[in-house]
Every structure is written in C-alpha cells, then in structure tokens.
Image 1 (cartoon, rainbow, N blue to C red):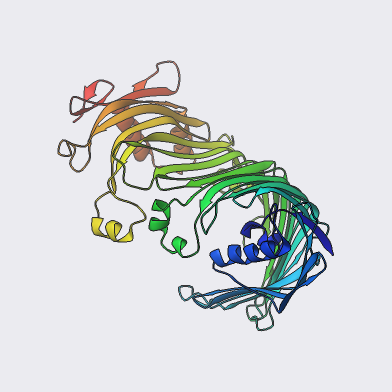
Image 2: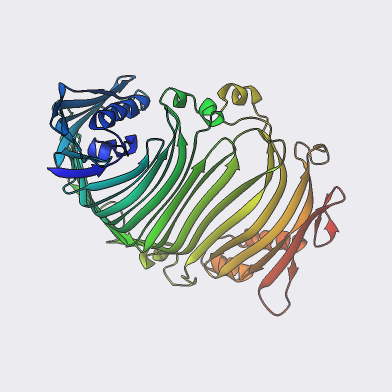
Length: 505
C-alpha cells in the first residue's frame, strides 16, 4: 500500500495515483471533486461502493473509463481509502500497482495497420503527494523513489505487437491548480534522476524481431497552461480563442541507447549516446513555438545493408526552432526560424567511397540558418474553412526579414552571410507577386575555388561546369588577389537589385 497526504484533487495526477484531495475538505468532498475533475476531462468514474468506516471513506471497485470514436481506455483500482486527518487535510491510500487497458481501431490511412490492444501496468511504491491551499487554488508537491509504466499486448492483440517499459527514479515536483468548473490554470514542474526505457517486439509473419533500450539522466521539465474542458477542446480554433494556452520546457542530461533489429535473418544494430538535450513548446491564440536541441551525439550502425563493417555519425551541436503567429494580427508580429548542425562527422569509410585518395579535407561540416522577422497575419491558421478559401494566397504579409546568421562549411570551403530586409506589401508588381524588398545581404566564400579544383581533379565535376560556375560567381563577387576568398553584397534599393553596386534588375 502507498500513502498519500493530500489537500486537493487534480486530473493531472490521475495517472500517477488515481486519487485526489483538497484543503479543508471532508473525504466525501475529495471523492466528489475527483469525479468532477475526471468528468471535465471526458472520463467516467464509477465505484461499486463508497461507505464510511469511522474517519475513513472507503471507496471500492473504482473504474475510470473513456471512450470516443472507437477508442477506449479503462483503469481499475480495487480500493481507495480517504482518511480525514482532522486538520482539514485528507490521507488517501491505494495499492502500489494497478492496471489500465487501451483499445483503438486500426488506422485507416495506414496500409497494414492493426488494431491497438494494450495492457498497461503502473507501479509507484511509496509515492507521496502533499497538497495545500484552497479548492480554487491548490498547490502541492510530490516525491517518490520510482515510477514504472509497463505496456504489454492485451488478450486480443495481434502477434506482431510488442511490449515496453519506462522506469523513472527519484521523482520530485510540484503543481498549482487554479480555477473552478471545467477551465483550469495549471502550473507544474518535475524532475527525475534517470529514465530507463526498454522494449521488444516480434512479427512472426515478417520473420523480424527488435529490442530497444535507453537510459537518460537528469530529466526535468515545467509547464504552464490554461486548460478547457474536453468538449471545448474539440475545435482547436475555438479553444484558442476561448483561452486555451500552453507553454513548456524540457531538458535531459547524458543519454545512451541501443537498438537491435533482425529482419529475415539480417541483423542491424544501432548504438549511441549524447551529452544532453532540450525541447520547448508554446501555443496560444497569438503564436505557436517549437524548439529542440542536442549536444555531442554519436551514432554507430552495424548492418549487412551497408558496404563496410560500421557506419559512424556524430555532431557537436544540433538545434531547431520555429516561432510563428497563428491568428489574425492588426500589427506586425514576430516570427523566427533556426536550423543548426555544428561539427557533423561521418566515418572515413564514407569519405573513402568518393575520395579514396584523401584529396579533400575531412573536417566536420556545419550548416546554420538563423532568421527572424515580422509578418502581419490576415487569416487564422487554425480556421480550416478560411485557410481552404485562400487557395494559393499566403495567409499573411511579410514585413521584415533579418538573416542573423548564414553559414555552411564542408571539405575546406565555407560560406557565411548576414542581412536585413524590409518589404512594402503595397507594391507587388516591381517584382511580380513579391512585396517590394529593401535591404542588403553580405556574403563571403572562402576555399571555394580550391574545392572546385579538387573536385575536377578527382573526376567528380567536369572542367567546363567548374569554369562556368567560377565565371558566374565572378559577376556577383569581389575576389581577393592573394587568397581564395570572395565577397559580395546583394542589395535591393530604389526598386532595383544590385550586386556589389552593379544594377542587375
């Protein structure tokens, strides 16, 4: 048995414990509000009995269920005891482990998809949650040595389905739930010392099987959101206008992973790790943001399908970020786009396939595109009817673009650049279909001619194509006399396009 000391209830903890509680309330109020919270999430809660035994409300035969569009979820807890402590708080005791079932029809849009039938076992010994505050603003903390979720095929599952397990250690966190009715404001953060994932699957028909394992250290995250009831969330456009919003950040430390696949007698093994990573996301009626990054990834692949014993890949840093407005705006709103891959390396065996003599530098490659700007949205991106009516017309007007960093380096050559532009959306005739730009971009290429010459010598590039490229570049760039370096300034001004001061259009 595990022991919970609560003073409130929240649907967020339903998966952790299937229990809830309140500050300054009775066991009956705790039990009723837990049912209300589940109902607001589209779930149904039933019990075979709920009777007082002294200071304790004993609820037996608890079932939590959800069903929509053929998908069903059921969880069963034998007994939950709500004990009145006499100080306005309630202790809730339930078993260390209980089971859930998830069933869903086969996805019609995926060829060969099978129905889902899963048995889920959740184990969380000695998990403790301490809550305080009021019913309308409940704050609480939780802590536990471990939480394990095991997913296995159900009784009617197809033979090709597998199983997996996720185990977290040294959990801790806190939540704040505010509001009454279905709408809730929830602020939370959590941390776990480690997460271990393991899984296995087998498909006898395809003569294939696979195993997977991963260990992730120092997992942490926080979220802040306004959540509406299940019915209100059915239409995302209306939900956003109604106040739905979420903002979250997650991070992890060192990670290792191992995947082994055997397909019709052909084995493939993938192993690797990284030093850490992070992810962020945000969404409300005004904007959508998503970003992710990782550091020091290394990956090794052994397979009969590659022409050498082992393929190695890696990078020093990778990142992606996107920010964009999603609703109509009366003023220009921010947007941003970043993609970054720094220090990318591959095995010498890969280089050897097209550079057996080692003529090219095998330096790590880098690609960075970092931009931001302003756009005025004329259409709500989540309004399906309005978006369909646009046809090929953009849903907004571009006002400004700032290329903060442009960088590409490979095989000894490097291109860098930066620039800033503004756009006049009242003039889309000077450059047909495009708002009139004003601004400039500075570019610099080093090692370009040397790389071309080496590609020609290796037979990978015809001489005439290399000469044509050099001639074309010379029209737009200034070359240094004493080194392999070219610079160029591309500029839009006075309704024209200029390269190094020479008008081209």
